[in-house]
Image (cartoon, rainbow, N blue to C red):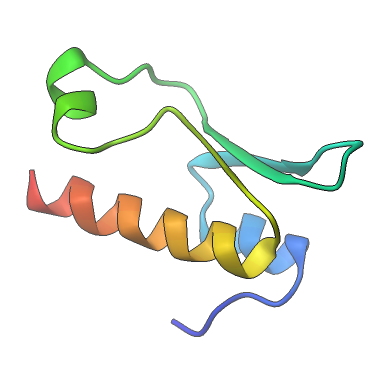
Length: 71
């Protein structure tokens, strides 16, 4: 998958996340509909992510997918 360039592309690429831009201009994503267990957090999964821009957030979301698949 190529790196999404705009917020709408990012939302479409990662439907399990609620993604938004804060009033301060930072990008945020939080998981939809499920809370992570302590074990999942221990292994590197995050409930909420933040980044400076869409590209950085996309990379973090890709890393979360890869980590989750490895569990």
